[in-house]
Length: 250
Image 1 (cartoon, rainbow, N blue to C red):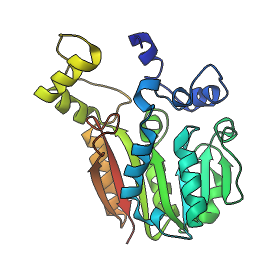
Image 2: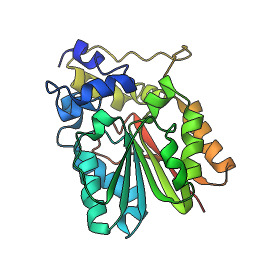
Image 3: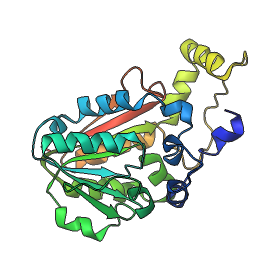
């Protein structure tokens, strides 16, 4: 894939994903914002990592909310798990994305831009598990990340848990590509002998860094929850430059 094709997925917003959803020229991976090579054959590993972190998913009879599920294989895997474990599953996304997913009796599709979905207000304090995977950076760029967090915590039940997954942290990325392992990775992946470009102390708009990730953890803790930054499992496509936030409400 050329650099231009990678750039196509660099700056996306909610409206872009609405267009992508029905674009049959795109693969399922591309419709959710990833070049094919980043996700192909990796979704089972991703879902296994999610299950290791969201322990309540492995129990029975829970209410589960997936924010921005997209239309790749991941939400289908989530549906299959919820069917087996008798969970109720809420999916929040654009109507275009949701139309790409099968209808099931235990699944409620909610069209809209989270957290500005009035129909979710009736679930305050009653959702056991919240997953938002590879979504936070889009919210940060075009919306209000604090509204996103606060609304999620309001929905979460006592004893509930939330995973904000696959966060592209530019600070983590810089640390990695400044290391010998990162340089080797860059040479191999980009098929070049040039070193990776790493610039510190530069203003970068619309990107997440340590300050935002750690502020989200602090805000969740200050609102009565336990919160942790977790590494992604080895073998995930971008584990060397992405991470997760796990939140648990006591």
